[in-house]
Image 1 (cartoon, rainbow, N blue to C red):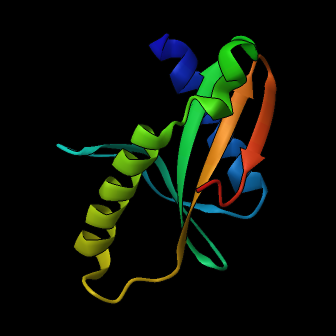
Image 2 (cartoon, helix red, strand yellow):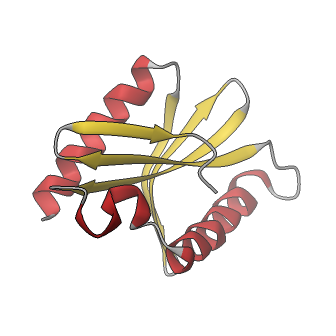
Length: 111
């Protein structure tokens, strides 16, 4: 499972870089959780959750980012932004890169 997740992160990173984003940090962790990829584009900071599923069963990869996971990611992003920028945050958004088999769906501004 971890190998699939690592491979998905590598593919997502390459895809996002090909689409003009630059890597700021990978696997940003704290006691609150982890953000898979922190990227930057012309609009600001992009927090990326990468999900991989073998198939679209049970709603698929994107649907696995449920309300509890979104709250954890938002708390971790807030901590990350405070640590990096203090009280002068640049604009940010949350994207999801969802893999179902080999297919990638990039959901910009997912939540």
